[in-house]
Image (cartoon, rainbow, N blue to C red; front, top):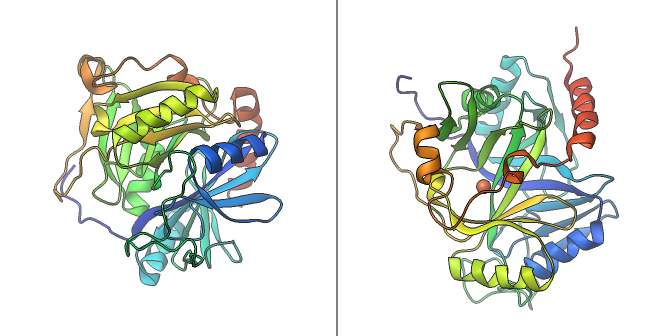
Length: 337
Ligand SMILES: [Fe+2]
């Protein structure tokens, strides 16, 4: 592909909504184990944030009858950037609408990926205000590091299971300005996965081919620590408290991330990042493609063990529930004739 002028209208992944059928147990995981701080609970959802997340919340934990992902919230780079991206989405023909009154942010544009993953794009945000007790002496830190668990520092990225990786990623590239940093293609066939970003991070969003379900599901949501030592400490705690570790701690070749995948009690896969991986500053970055030759020679896992079969097929909602959720999403995004 020839050089495309970068679009910097989407600034960051700001928040993600997770559904859980085991609310109290999930809240224990995010509050006690990952050390996240609740902002408020409206009876339907509890809003939490990691200690270096700057806004009202980075995680909206919603009581539901199944696990899965609700809204993925993106902050635009400016009010003008928001208007430009909304105009681009509307010109694409995908349905969308302005919404008001969401907790933690102002007027937002709601739309979906081609698979149906619900997205919000907004500019106005409510900043977290620490109490006198929570206030840190470190000026760059919105609150003191909590004493609970092995606290995560910030939300990092989301990985969405989808029916067509290229189509879903293409929508985010073309209309929202994401750049495809790495991908996986076996035998010259369809893309199996790709990693996209709007910042020097390798990804804020990834799309993975849903090989066991209909797409429109969650593969995982990731939070970032800072160093691998803390991740090892967390692995020790998770073993003590019977939280399932699916894979890691280990290091991916893709994104060079130190990873650990765990299942929070509600069933959603959560990734803990113990390192940033590498950063991208080259404006002419070209997508790095892993094939069947090199993906299994350091791409999937650089060191530290294998990814189990579950990693490639398990997502939320689990498959039976996923089929119903997909039908509902397709009905909701059906364009008016
Ligand atoms: Fe990840």
